[in-house]
Length: 312
Image 1 (cartoon, rainbow, N blue to C red):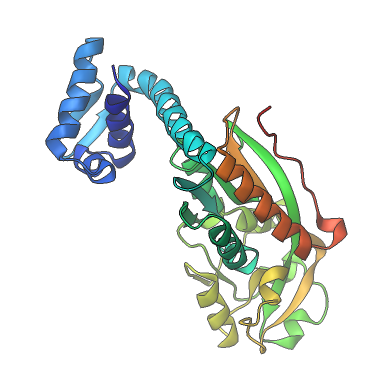
Image 2 (image 1 turned 45 degrees about the horizontal axis):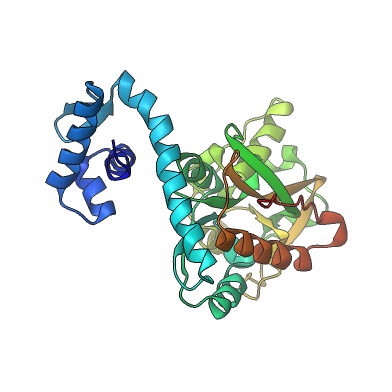
């Protein structure tokens, strides 16, 4: 059993096909198929049920997957660690970021890190926090910056800052005073992150507030991106929610007004990693950079940082 075989197996699971695994690894599909077959022959069991173009794990495959991911991840971290010991002159790191990271830290972080380490490849995935969690759990992302709450099984969570969530409307009468959930459910609402719907952490907070009062929040329109939601607010289609960081951006529409919730609501931004994982030196440096940028922009009362453990 080799690292190469395990890596082919893990990528086949992630891509649900040998073809997808071959593309991810930069090899041919028959090569991946042969590597997995050798792994099956080594253990004397089938790891996949092959049905057409799709792969389904057998019980043996499910058992192996847990260990295979850890071994492949550890091997990748070992490679990165050696590169870091050479002075961060090469290598790559993969970080998942909350979708609206651009409003918090992303451009400045990239600029500063690239200036210090121009030959280190940054792979930044601006997904919904829910998907970042899955990427960190599966080992496709070394770590992530997310909005809480998220499912934390297998994860360590380090809160950094909180940012108040505000209600936004083009109608001044809708934001003349702090808004209640009872008011929100009676008006047209536009929400973003349509793909993740109520799995999105901020939307979940809003839904839970409605449920606690026996109400149901049904958006009039759902779109994928915040920018599209704000454009619909400008056009009077409905109201939406935004974080304070978004409202401080020069791109925030001047015709849109905001107000707090009657009971203030916050997004908590946190760093996550797999439990007991060892971060590469490059990732630790990147997280320190992100933390510093977030801390500088947040009021003192909204700084929640827990130190990210470093290897001794």
